[in-house]
Image (tube, rainbow, N blue to C red; front, side, top):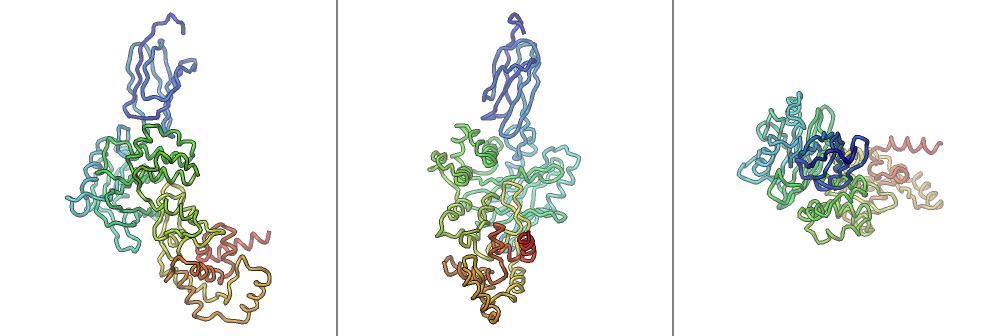
Length: 473
């Protein structure tokens, strides 16, 4: 382009507020004109066609701009928001208005009360041809229950807000403080999410649909305000924090204004602190050290895992799948979680394909009891221990060959494996180790596969077969 070309004043801005947006502008010859972090640009350009590249978190979009006059280009950024907040293509008022209304009154129970649980699900596209299938899927396949299975609420047309036109289903209610499970079940597909109800917080679960539920981009939010508000940016901040979990280098995408805003949301502060604990970058956590914090179980569990004197509270569950993965690895350590606890009952059916802790089943203790009874019928008088020397092993082998295991031993071991009358003491750990080691070579297999002994025990034949084949090679 010649210097004599007529110049035009060009402004570029976006409909949405996108703190941390990265912009690159190139001309027709691919010469880079601008590269900076900005939400708007104002510059003088010659006549021609330009390409604008815009990246935000993990989303990238391109725009072609024809410059032949002074002009203000107002662009729409199509970031796929799960929540119907701010001004994105997926956040129209037919999604956001009912979300704001029903996050402040109950769809189930007394509508005059502010709910402390809020479920929102909708199609990404309100004009999708499969809207009726989405509505049917939502109202027929989601339910809530507590750890004892006593609360079992299935979503339906009567206890939910249903908008077939926009393919929206909302469920909101008042629940007692504590641990709950959100379950999705359809034709053999199951996902169960643990969540908590805290005093003075609203637990929110937001989900979008294509032809199937988009669980990968679903999320939990623990709101310390008054409910869902379209104009607030905490859900976008949550996206940024999750992106930092994928790669800690992405933590730098949190701008100074982002970090300042996070301090107003105790849930987000908790997620940032967990991130720093997991990655070992605790020096980056100093600015959040005194910010209000929601004490998620993930934090206590991470601290317990680094303290040889502590056992994690296994009647709670972390909300992040990566923390659950850390809790289930017990090799070379003490009994990390209590047998028969909620954690023990879900550990065999965990799924790590999404950010949030989830599983397909909460095992019934009565079924575990029957399984353990059968295994313990063949249990040895003395269990072999990984730390046994050669002499100890020979002695135990001789005693086991001539002594029958008393029924009292079997009963005590069964109670131990079911978590009955256990407390966090060294004696209990010894009882647990004895019970485990009395059945085959469970400890050796658990050590080899880096899995909880109870998982090996409940699937003993499978893992024993694999272990034997490995040792034959």
